[in-house]
Length: 146
Image 1 (tube, rainbow, N blue to C red):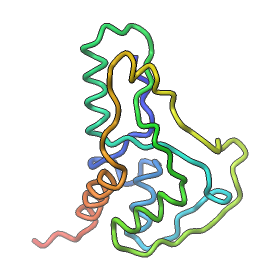
Image 2: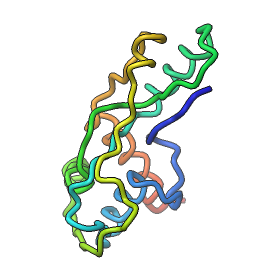
Image 3: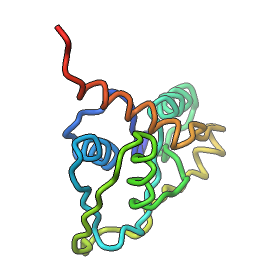
């Protein structure tokens, strides 16, 4: 059984409510990104191609117990917003709102079993994956020239 953590990439739905798609579309639209609290809370993001490799590794393994799959490279939500802005070469507008009571300050999956049993780890750098993802959303946003 795969326990998938924060996967992103081209093909995501614009309005799926995930942090990467939300931040990219807000920046493209020129609208503020809501940041809860100070924005120091961290998350880990795994590019879709890496996740596919992890799922294949799990499928061909003889592992019969749950395995966490994802990346363990943390980034704060504020740093993520600014990184996406740099990738898009567009300004980032942040709007700080009240912190959520149940919002974890750190969300990092324990991938020890994944590394040990599957011999797998994510390899796509966040900036590279965000560039591909942002290009996908920017292309979707461009008006068609028919």
